[in-house]
Image (cartoon, rainbow, N blue to C red; front, top):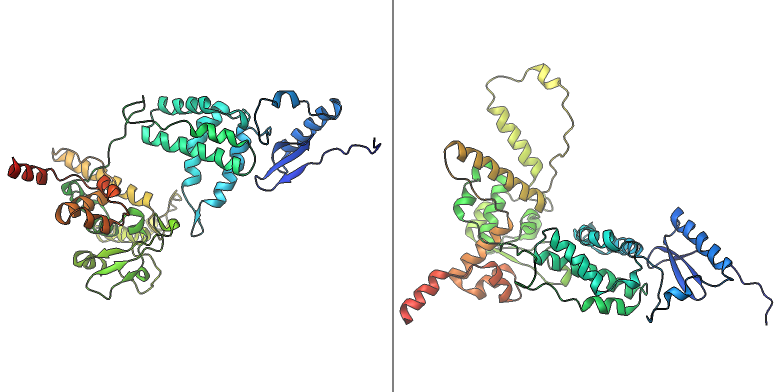
Length: 409
């Protein structure tokens, strides 16, 4: 036998996960973020236990549970930390982080609360169902619960691909079926429907001309909110009788799909006053809308602004208007306009306008196009690859069905 001394296992960096790792008796132990004080303390603890146990891992007996694979001591909290680090670098579009990392954080919140200190390899289908039940109890709708559970399963799939946990953990979680309509305690979400044109027209005098132009363009063309807020002159082809708008970025661009939006005479009439000489500048700017609003307020003043008022220090605004609308700021502008319109309507004794959001305007266009030109035409205009998706957007034409049945009996 060799008399060579057994070297103390080293503290190493696992590059794939960003974790610190030490290998004891052929088994990897993940310690937490590499370089952190917590990971160093965990390393010292494990080495002390290993040495006191005759240079054998003290957890050898507890880890022998009939599982194959790596069988690491990675906890769910540690796995989530590694995955979120990966997600923040992966879910980036045109150099800008997407909303997906935040969606993942919301999805895994009950997982962390219930099982954060559990070994990732010990998480199974029953535990996933327990996490799902907390989502049901919190009042989330069925569709959102299924999306969040899907994100959790995706985290474990990634961990398997990085050889952080055994493959059968992910296989077991995949056996948990999604919640079915009418077969669970979860509430159902209200379907997204078109908003009546009268409710849309009611906010015209309460929004900026920029926001109203975007509302009108959505009603006419069926484009998504994210597409209308990002319109630039360089993305428009105005040479033909029908103009085309090719967004630089859109919902399915990461799948390699092209998106072309066709703009007829009414949309062209709206856009002509917004086309810019700066080709890459956005057509609709909240900063310009704010400047125009202030100009109108100054013009309506009955008295001149006093020097003391000009020099008066004003508190710093929490949010300044930027050069670009986002989907969220566009939605907020509409929500504010609805609130203002309802205040005026209440003073006049009129019923309030129900809340609506800009994505419903796409449903307006879908329903009108399907009614006038058929499902295939609506699918082509909306950019759907399947007519089944278009059916989700387009309200069924009950009048047409009634007319058919009147003829056939």
